[in-house]
Image (cartoon, rainbow, N blue to C red; front, side):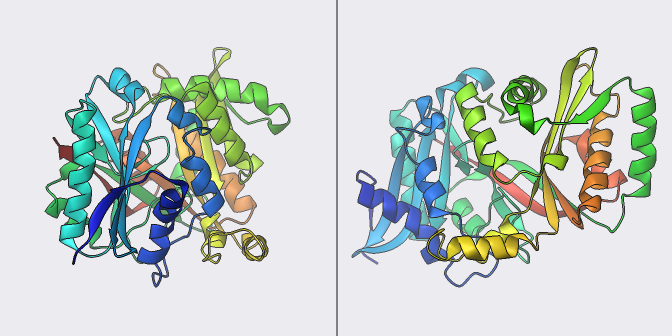
Length: 371
């Protein structure tokens, strides 16, 4: 195969870069096509707030005009400064089942990363842990939930064949029940009674001020987590604006204690249940009709973010968040919830989920590329 790796330097190249997944997953029923318009927004280095501090180089594998794969090499100085790790990222990886192509893509990404002066790279990060990340290792029998990744089973073999090694696993838990788990209700009620905190829904009529509070909690509650990088205010507001379009106002909570916000929880309806029917990834002319039709049938959600600031983590606030999420979710007709992603070594959170009857059903992996 006489393929070559080319730099993405033009808008036509970028359009091809975005088109690659539609080639790889053409016949894959569990792949959820993203909206192409949103993909162009994410990769717009002039406008998307991530690229105000991050930089990247994109590469395509092509053979006589045929697209074979893609990869991005990314450097975020804010991550390096915050984590005190001289590491870049690799992400947006897609590839046909060919080791030579995969290895060539990683080698090209490594060349650029070396030029940037980093010692290695972790990924897939698309483009950081504040966005989608992780390679699916198991659970290929069902589509991913909202803002989770999907890939074909052979990807792990390609990545390991290119010399990358495991850095960290991320777990996804599933609760599939027609009622609030009895043990959760018991534990949460006790915590609410004894914990000296309150939980309320986010006030969407006063969202600007609420976002200020949530940003404080977000950047504080996760600051010691592996791989975490605080969001800038521009990034956070950009993300909040997007999530507002799909959020259920009854499933977003703030915990308060001692007169200040100390915890935040966000569960999103699994819009992937609608997006999976829009195979072309376009809203017009018929995509929006398909999405709106299937959106009425969404019956599962994903607990996407839940955190409590240090000093308040032993009061059962996480249990209260889960309790209110399940109580409100069941009231509104949701019948299953994914709690993801959770670090494999987050013993406390994983134990809580196991105690309330959740099932570990998908594993995602972050790989490290040594330079």
